[in-house]
Length: 472
Image 1 (tube, helix red, strand yellow):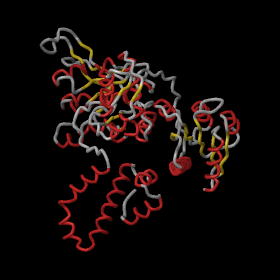
Image 2 (cartoon, helix red, strand yellow):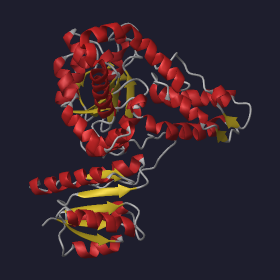
Image 3 (cartoon, one colour):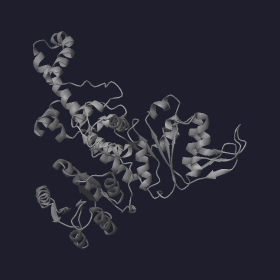
Image 4 (spheres, one colour):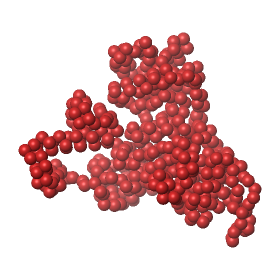
């Protein structure tokens, strides 16, 4: 019987988890402090540990660190109601199997436990992950508690310590540079230099010399030797922002740095050896550029050893309120404004917008609103969208119904001719199938969330999935 240790000072949660896990056939034991689990774990092996991060006597991450020193193979799932960027990153870096925010769904924690126990069985040898030094936050922060962002935090924790190349993909304004800086600041290279080069902002003729430097007399205007960014970043980290905008010749030299750690300055014969970790980012489809002959296939595979895809803001709208509040307070301090209140109606307006400029657009919108604000409250009047939104905003159900009628009316004759007397049942089935399919896609297959959005029970949703042969 697999043994699961539950460490939390919330007695009701401990009781609930113990009862649930016991019913599933596990041996569940509970502890209410870090001291208790550390004392027992020495003599009683656990197959998995559910560990709260905020215990009465110490932080769960400190307990995690101690347990990992003596029991490196045991999967530990951190549970917390306070999900910050650094907590997620540090938990993964210290060796946590995973990280879950409270309150959580029973299905979600059950699936995580099953995965953890499966990994415990397959694990043959320990992987030592050095502890992070204390991380000091500045005013730049990655904001978001959504599931999509929690995955981003976990990914950062998993790749930060190694020197592996990371390709960061996402639309403009999603925070690719912030993620790159987080990887750098949580790596063993954090005491070394970090340089971000925007390949799209530097003319093609200058980018190669910017990256690799040049010798005196290499070209007209080269009056002295110049050290390039790769040389400056020795023992550090370089971010090639918008890497898709490099010329093919520059791509070839970057590939050599990745393969051999060597290059020559423009106009020089001396081979320069550097120890640089390369991070790259892009908002373009590299696969399409390869087909068009604009991006090297070999460089593509070198860069995408580890790839992180940042979600657009429209894919994580549940984070909008936290983002608005963060930028509201940040820009209030920066601008010296005295606005003290955010009108809640702002959030309704923002949730119906598609955010083509993502987080950057939201930050600028809040800043502009504070500048325009004449009173002590930020209201809808100060929130001005940069573009006409592609998504129709409905003021009420009557407006929604009228829009649906206008869209369906031209199709009615064709539908009637196609189905004849079975129009009602056939059309309802097609619409239901579409709704379920789209809702499952929006919730990334989470049936609990999908059922809640659809307003039906979980069992009903399962029956519909089977009926329409949908994949969840």
